Length: 559
Image 1 (cartoon, rainbow, N blue to C red):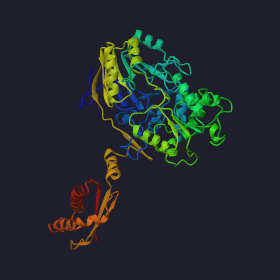
Image 2 (spheres, helix red, strand yellow; image 1 turned 90 degrees about the horizontal axis):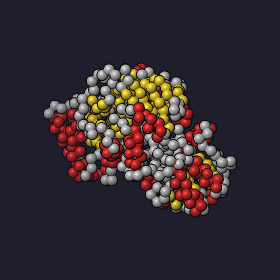
Image 3 (tube, one colour; image 1 turned 180 degrees about the vertical axis):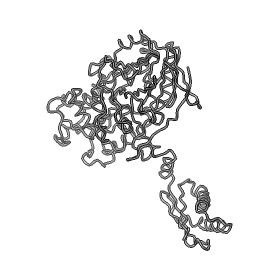
Image 4 (cartoon, rainbow, N blue to C red; image 1 turned 30 degrees about the vertical axis):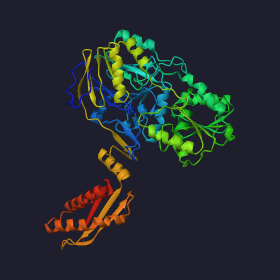
């Protein structure tokens, strides 16, 4: 098993008839999935998703894969293949197409339908589209791509087998092996076996549930729990789910029809996605169940289908919980059904929403107290099953945090896979003569979307934001006579975000004056040097007296 290295060189030139694989996102986090395949001077991209920010990313809207390693080679990209329509696999596509707008976009009917509104929102001309289904084989430059049906928590998910003269790489995308899926579309293990018989040289497998033993619970198994919630609720029901979880919405619609309730969608993405799913035939709406208004029926006959199952601050459920939603106000006795799992990193945000809803008098049903959600990812038993069917020569776990990748790699090793590579974002893997190895790494970091800016916010600026949020802010304004070198006004100290009254700074003001006068007497008139003098004095005082490390902004004005 090839383990991760702390320092890796830049990769050398790609050997003739060799395949290079470079993950630019998704290996080390659950999100922003993007993998670049290179052969014969051409590039094929599989997925281009986003990662949602955590608490240590204040002000950030989205996190993108790093396009830097391929930015000067965008003309070599022959296509971007999308395995399915979740945000962590398609959300970055508009940002990629802003850099080169005519990259062909490849995906299933539903996946492309979910991408289209994003492109319109970014005012992008429609890129060339290639709609594919399971069993299709398409050529993109030197890459022959065969698409294989896989079951996931969104319809129309696909794995892709990429064939070049270097060999066959099979990328599962996100998948599980639900044997009784709601839409009847199972993971095509016969195709996996066929590809395995012919020879899979590199198997890239979903790692998210590699630590979970056994098999993932079937979607149908949660129907009784949802039915129980409907049967025992006497007032309004609010169901929170991913806006792309069409199967879950279908279960809610069926339960509403059974119990004589109406359903209204809440949240822009929920309304848009369900309209798309209905028009394409992926969502079957019972007659008369869906209504446009949230008060179209009495509370005991209403269901609201909402976004915000991950505690996102601006999503509908979070705004309902903190009473800032303009249309929906929670009443004591309402039931909130959170039909989702906990995405790693979102736990605190989700529990804050649950606490807020509970405080308002709602009964909150979630995965922790009822079987109201099942994962969309293969557990350890399913991964073992796939390894034994495919019998790959090399395995590279993808899609997951570091512990997930390691757990998946250990499963592959147990089944006798000869070579398992544990890579992370930016690692470069070459497949040469049937053997895969890590040959180097490229610079690959987080790219932050902050309002209208993309990639302009740096880690140091995020650190400043965290300091402002956690430690507060002190500004010190001093005016100096540029002729005499004497202090005319100040220093005036202003603080924000500190519990102490500004009067506490009376103790440090004379020390600032003394330090500045000493520096000026020694001939120091450079503004930046004088600012450093002030910063040092105030920083030492704040650490000793206030036990804090606030952001300190000294301002020296010369009159």
